[in-house]
Amino acid sequence: MAKIRYFLAKTEPAVYSIHDLSRDGRTTWDGVRNAQARQAMQTMRPGDFVFIYHSGGVSAVVGLAKVASEPMEDPSAEKSTIIDFEFVHGLDEPVSLKAIKESGQFAEFALVRQSRLSTMEAPATFANWMKKQRPELKLYLKAS
Image (cartoon, rainbow, N blue to C red; front, side):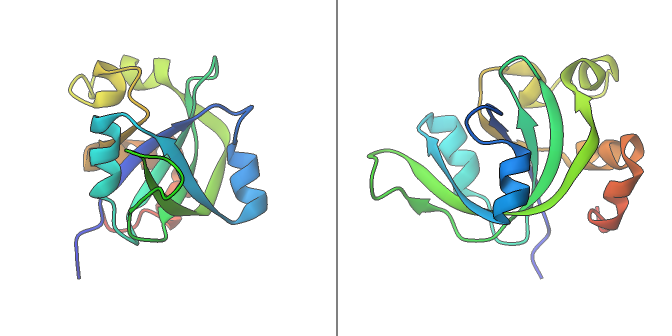
Protein backbone atom coordinates (compact mmCIF):
# COMPACT_ATOMS: atom_id res chain seq x y z
CA MET A 1 0.00 0.00 0.00
CA ALA A 2 1.30 3.43 -0.95
CA LYS A 3 2.12 5.92 1.77
CA ILE A 4 -0.60 8.53 2.26
CA ARG A 5 0.52 12.03 1.47
CA TYR A 6 -0.89 15.40 2.44
CA PHE A 7 -1.60 18.48 0.39
CA LEU A 8 -3.17 21.88 0.82
CA ALA A 9 -5.47 23.49 -1.76
CA LYS A 10 -6.61 27.08 -1.57
CA THR A 11 -9.97 28.37 -2.68
CA GLU A 12 -11.81 31.66 -2.46
CA PRO A 13 -14.86 30.94 -0.32
CA ALA A 14 -17.02 33.14 -2.56
CA VAL A 15 -16.05 30.93 -5.53
CA TYR A 16 -16.16 27.45 -3.96
CA SER A 17 -16.16 26.97 -0.19
CA ILE A 18 -15.81 24.05 2.18
CA HIS A 19 -19.58 24.34 2.62
CA ASP A 20 -20.04 23.83 -1.12
CA LEU A 21 -17.81 20.75 -1.00
CA SER A 22 -19.74 19.44 1.99
CA ARG A 23 -23.02 19.90 0.13
CA ASP A 24 -21.72 18.39 -3.13
CA GLY A 25 -19.79 15.54 -1.50
CA ARG A 26 -17.39 15.43 -4.42
CA THR A 27 -16.02 17.99 -6.86
CA THR A 28 -13.58 18.36 -9.70
CA TRP A 29 -10.85 20.74 -8.56
CA ASP A 30 -9.91 22.87 -11.53
CA GLY A 31 -8.55 26.23 -12.58
CA VAL A 32 -4.97 25.48 -11.49
CA ARG A 33 -2.52 26.75 -14.09
CA ASN A 34 0.59 27.65 -12.09
CA ALA A 35 3.32 25.16 -13.02
CA GLN A 36 4.41 24.52 -9.43
CA ALA A 37 0.82 24.04 -8.22
CA ARG A 38 0.07 21.74 -11.17
CA GLN A 39 3.16 19.71 -10.35
CA ALA A 40 1.85 19.20 -6.81
CA MET A 41 -1.54 18.13 -8.16
CA GLN A 42 0.09 15.69 -10.57
CA THR A 43 1.67 13.86 -7.61
CA MET A 44 -1.68 13.42 -5.83
CA ARG A 45 -3.12 9.91 -5.71
CA PRO A 46 -6.48 8.55 -4.57
CA GLY A 47 -6.52 8.26 -0.79
CA ASP A 48 -4.20 11.22 -0.17
CA PHE A 49 -5.59 13.96 2.08
CA VAL A 50 -6.04 17.61 1.15
CA PHE A 51 -6.40 20.42 3.66
CA ILE A 52 -8.87 22.91 2.23
CA TYR A 53 -7.78 26.49 2.83
CA HIS A 54 -9.95 29.57 2.39
CA SER A 55 -8.01 32.51 1.03
CA GLY A 56 -9.44 35.90 0.12
CA GLY A 57 -9.24 37.51 3.54
CA VAL A 58 -10.05 34.38 5.55
CA SER A 59 -6.56 32.82 5.41
CA ALA A 60 -7.32 29.61 7.28
CA VAL A 61 -7.54 25.85 6.96
CA VAL A 62 -11.28 25.16 7.02
CA GLY A 63 -11.61 21.46 6.29
CA LEU A 64 -10.32 18.20 4.94
CA ALA A 65 -10.89 16.40 1.65
CA LYS A 66 -9.59 13.18 0.16
CA VAL A 67 -8.21 12.74 -3.35
CA ALA A 68 -10.77 10.67 -5.27
CA SER A 69 -9.22 10.37 -8.75
CA GLU A 70 -5.95 10.38 -10.59
CA PRO A 71 -4.90 13.84 -11.84
CA MET A 72 -5.91 14.64 -15.42
CA GLU A 73 -5.21 17.31 -17.98
CA ASP A 74 -8.17 19.68 -18.12
CA PRO A 75 -9.87 19.09 -21.50
CA SER A 76 -11.32 22.61 -21.44
CA ALA A 77 -8.17 24.55 -20.54
CA GLU A 78 -4.67 24.18 -21.93
CA LYS A 79 -1.89 23.79 -19.35
CA SER A 80 -4.34 23.11 -16.55
CA THR A 81 -4.71 20.07 -14.30
CA ILE A 82 -7.91 18.76 -12.71
CA ILE A 83 -8.52 16.19 -10.00
CA ASP A 84 -11.52 15.00 -7.99
CA PHE A 85 -11.80 15.62 -4.26
CA GLU A 86 -14.28 14.10 -1.82
CA PHE A 87 -15.42 15.93 1.28
CA VAL A 88 -14.14 14.44 4.54
CA HIS A 89 -14.69 16.98 7.32
CA GLY A 90 -15.27 20.69 7.86
CA LEU A 91 -13.71 22.46 10.82
CA ASP A 92 -16.08 24.34 13.12
CA GLU A 93 -13.11 26.48 14.11
CA PRO A 94 -10.72 27.15 11.21
CA VAL A 95 -6.96 27.12 11.85
CA SER A 96 -5.61 30.50 10.80
CA LEU A 97 -2.48 31.18 8.82
CA LYS A 98 -1.43 33.35 11.75
CA ALA A 99 -1.58 30.33 14.10
CA ILE A 100 0.35 28.21 11.60
CA LYS A 101 3.07 30.85 11.33
CA GLU A 102 3.16 31.50 15.08
CA SER A 103 3.76 27.80 15.75
CA GLY A 104 7.27 28.36 14.40
CA GLN A 105 7.30 24.84 12.94
CA PHE A 106 6.61 25.43 9.26
CA ALA A 107 9.06 27.99 7.91
CA GLU A 108 9.86 25.64 5.01
CA PHE A 109 6.21 24.84 4.19
CA ALA A 110 5.16 26.49 0.90
CA LEU A 111 2.07 27.91 2.64
CA VAL A 112 4.39 30.11 4.69
CA ARG A 113 7.14 30.64 2.08
CA GLN A 114 5.05 31.13 -1.07
CA SER A 115 1.82 32.74 0.00
CA ARG A 116 0.37 32.97 -3.52
CA LEU A 117 0.82 29.30 -4.44
CA SER A 118 -2.65 27.73 -4.69
CA THR A 119 -1.88 24.02 -4.31
CA MET A 120 1.05 22.40 -2.55
CA GLU A 121 2.26 19.32 -0.76
CA ALA A 122 1.96 19.58 3.02
CA PRO A 123 4.50 17.92 5.29
CA ALA A 124 3.35 15.03 7.47
CA THR A 125 4.44 17.12 10.45
CA PHE A 126 1.73 19.61 9.47
CA ALA A 127 -0.92 16.86 9.47
CA ASN A 128 0.25 15.78 12.92
CA TRP A 129 0.20 19.38 14.15
CA MET A 130 -3.32 19.83 12.74
CA LYS A 131 -4.48 16.76 14.70
CA LYS A 132 -3.28 18.47 17.88
CA GLN A 133 -5.02 21.73 16.93
CA ARG A 134 -8.28 20.04 15.98
CA PRO A 135 -8.53 16.65 17.73
CA GLU A 136 -11.55 15.65 15.63
CA LEU A 137 -9.13 15.22 12.72
CA LYS A 138 -7.60 12.21 14.51
CA LEU A 139 -10.60 10.21 13.29
CA TYR A 140 -9.54 10.79 9.68
CA LEU A 141 -5.77 11.25 9.83
CA LYS A 142 -4.98 8.04 11.67
CA ALA A 143 -1.76 6.82 10.11
CA SER A 144 0.63 9.72 9.90
